[in-house]
Amino acid sequence: MIKNERISYRGGRTFKVRPPFFNKMKKLIAVITIVIALPVILYMVLPSDRKRIRNLIYEGREAAMRKDLDGVMSPVSYNYRDRYGFSYLYLKETFKSLFERVDSFEIEISSLRIKVDEKKAEARFNLTVRTITDGRESYLLGSEGFPDSVVLTLEKERLKWKVVEAWVPTREGTGF
Image (cartoon, rainbow, N blue to C red; front, side, top):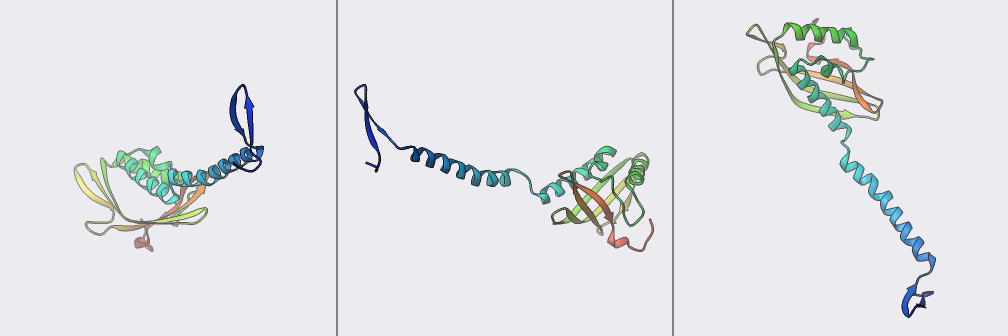
């Protein structure tokens, strides 16, 4: 028998009555378990920033192959500005014009590397973009067996990653 435990007789039945201390301990243990388990479960269920950025890149690729302008522009920040003078609106008009001129796209992404800080991230990958226009195949980025290296700079805006700059280091110093 536990110290301070009482035996009570009611209506001919015998049962043990524990002091209120044991009930408080049970509640405390339950709260501690929930506090420890909840972050672990959330960490396992929610995708990491790297996974979110990887998904953003591959969803953009799929949208470009479908020629879906809204899908291509959704991960791009309204604050987009790159080294080539492109802003969000200019980039959108460029994609719109490209989608009208080109029949279809084949896009290959390889060697994706993502570096994440608190509010900034950088994604580097190799990209080859083949276009088909009037039955003729040509390369928009990269060439047969030689992809172009692409760097995306991303920032977290309202809990979502958005592209704020894109550049091609292999084309530095050359005009489009």
